[in-house]
Image (cartoon, rainbow, N blue to C red; front, side):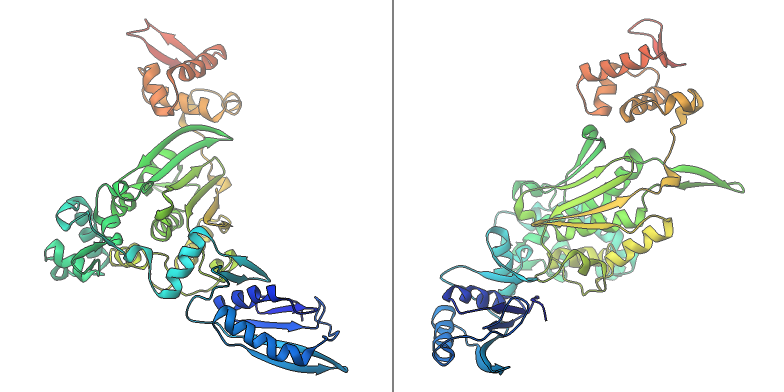
Length: 446
């Protein structure tokens, strides 16, 4: 049997292998075999009887735990089996915390160590009390959004919601010893960045490495949840228009329910302590939604795509979103994302895990990539030669022929000089002309 999550082979004993034992104890437990090659072939170990005494004592003295140490025999060779059980409390080796992940041992540092210690002690970051924000400081609109959505979803009744904000927070378990939890502040305080820097959402439209335009959505998590999806689909994406009999049908290149679920997941699972906003990068063929977070210990990207239990990074925030009807509580969110993509006809999303960053990648439905309506005024052949930013400028001018350079620059999120250069390129190509004076004229698409 090859080395794996729970098995490690060593040819001889070294005291540094106590770190491996520490890693097994902090993870799911495992076994170390002394006197074997990497493929599990038994070659025997010298001084086996002495090791039967030394190893248990060193484990207890260095790590403060007990492990079974057994002498085994195979093909005339003696070798040692060390059986390590998972421990409920954090185990350290000279102040270092090690963890078994896959077939490797990792030393936990920074946020990874903080998350591990909180998980082992049963504490969660979003459950800590905040002393400088009171219930009277919270935001009326955030409460209104919550009550509207909780009532609409049926997760709470009108009678449940006809109580004071203080009683509602108590019912949602967002108050501890008379103080608001972090979850309560993030969900209902309009300016959470005052205590958690980076608590907002960034959205950017890209053409290759060039940023065409961008937005930031600030406010409580409930305000972000209420506004981000509408902003993406109104400003950043275009729908293909078809008709079924007399009914107009709009089909977007990315499944709305999938994007909605992914954004809500990011808001709930984000490690806001990193002070890094959620970032949504939208390109012609792909959309990336990324947030700082870590998978539960022992999980991989493949775990996410298969059946799994619900393990929210921020359980108290997740409870608020569940009551509002934004999410389910059975770990079915990613399955819903995959189902929505399948219904639209796109590929399943790809989950990319980079240390303390989790990113979901959506691919656009190619048949629904939209040609802007300005193609009615320029030939499709000419239109296809334009860059993405030039197409956006054309759309701006088509919607408002009286647009100024400054207005175009603002919509593109670029300088006036850059906007002027893009206009000049379209003029040089003979696609647009200026009719009338600089102050009172307008743009005409040829």
